[in-house]
Length: 246
Image 1 (cartoon, rainbow, N blue to C red):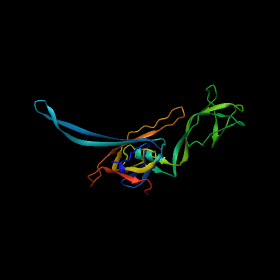
Image 2: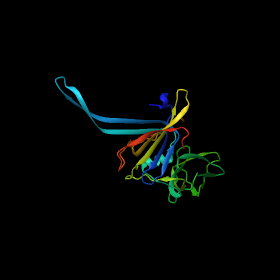
Image 3: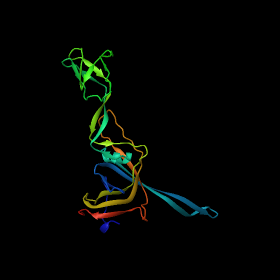
Image 4: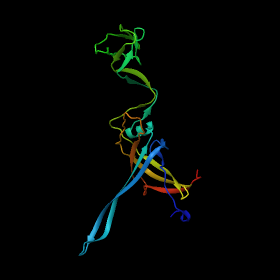
């Protein structure tokens, strides 16, 4: 029952905090679009008597799943789902994509210097191959200034801002989860915070990243299954805190 019998509403989305069970590294988001917690329980009816009435039900296999939908595509959350560790200061093969480049002063200039051993194919507007000798990013051509030449894709060596290696045999670990929600009264005033704490959740490794030609709000969803943590009898707890609680 609400305190002093007052009416309470949950009208907003939660903030989420995830704490890695092993490393204690934290992931957090205050930009969720939605969150959902669902519980399923397997039940078996015990029936007997001339009317085959239900005398009792056997309940087991409680399963709780939590899904959060975020408007950010946060790197650390994506790394979590991939079971990948983000590394900095790494040299990697990156790729320049096929594109048209304008001839200026008898030269075309590539966005990046091709990696050693890479061949960049150049064609004119009619699809005829143009012989070009590149020195670094520059190549000398005989076409008129203002002409557009089309280059193939090619690999170049880059300094990665961040690198996530996608291993075939590594999966997401387990986390402690905290969902923090605001509680409102009938006057739409925030009167408390509701925190749902699960001692152990396991991310569902299946997820989807998509894109479209139209620029619009896009979200990414992550689903977690609540699991029993070793040495505990409970899956977690729900606590109501004063709004000004630290």
